[in-house]
Image (cartoon, rainbow, N blue to C red):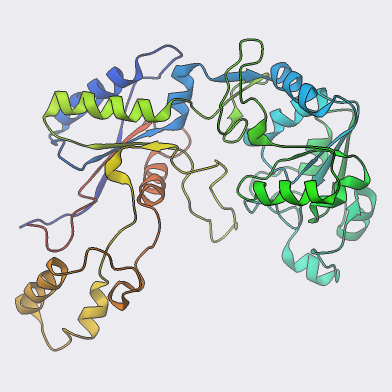
Amino acid sequence: MRYTGVTSRGIIMPIFKEGDDLVALIRDGLLKAAKEEGFVIQDKDVVGVTEAVVARTQGNYATVRQIAKDVRQKLGGEDMGIVFPILSRNRFAIMLRALSMSCKKLYVQLSYPSDEVGNHLISVDEVDAKKVNPYSDSFDEKKFREKFGFETVHPFTGIDYIKYYKSLGENIEIVFSNDPCYILKYTKNVINCDIHTRKRTKRILQAGGAERVCSLDDIMTASVDGSGYNEKYGLLGANKATEEKVKLFPRDCQNFVDRLQQELMKATGKKPEVMIYGDGGFKDPVGGIWELADPVVSPAYTEGLKGTPNELKMKYFADNDLKDLSGQELAEAMKEKIKAKDSNLVGDMTSQGTTPRQLTDLLGSLCDLTSGSGDRGTPVILIQNYFTNYATE
């Protein structure tokens, strides 16, 4: 009888550098961890590799000057506006420096009361108290400060992002609006910097009269003066590497996960699944921050990780069909229900309350929570028994 279900282990690895053979190092690190700590790699185990080490070993970096050159070529190098950047020192500040270098005047339009991922400039309560309609009311910086005060300090970071973002370029002017087309009062050359709503925002800007429009996924899609690049996501998923360059989202991801799966199969005789993960898809209920600042949770994964969970809600049966049973009789009846479930429970009341999300979004969130974002030193995660259930022997 099994007494445990899903387990998630952070696997301590060496500090990877550009040019390292990541597949071989991860294979060897997993095998050593299994031997030293007494666990066995099995079929359908999930190996998660953080996108950061994939990009780092690829050398997928771009400098502020390389980014600025690409932006000048695509937006013209004159006055330019950006709309809906997130408030982040790690994710966006260095890109803002590059953008300010690419043009004569840069108008930065911030959404309010928060950015796309929940970082607040001001609280919703302040918006209500000032009788402001965030769907229609727009402000320059002077009017925004007069309305909401001259201190807008982020509760977690202690940063006033209005002051901080203005400090990143002498040519920066900040305005506030949730209407993408408000920026067109200042310039017709626009980069929309939102992540998950980027296609809609771009469409609205084009329909509203913008002359040149790019999204972040249109910038750095090819190498500039020897830089890294990402042909699909551009600058989306990038974050700060040094004061002068960013690490881009990794390339050739499908090739990497397929090769790692093959190497682990050769070494173990088992077939684990492999995925690359970035940010998890979860939200902080206290701060209201949505973790997902990457364009996707997982840019690549092996075939066995496609789809969504297909689970019964055990408490539904315990409270209804099997409510008169208890003990071993209840356990056996529940196992039979699980064994007999349909292969597709979409729309079935017996699955109500289960999680209808992509497997890779769920697994990527578990990986992200396990590895953390700081100094744990575990960029590889091994998840076991994820595809078992109560009826698994």
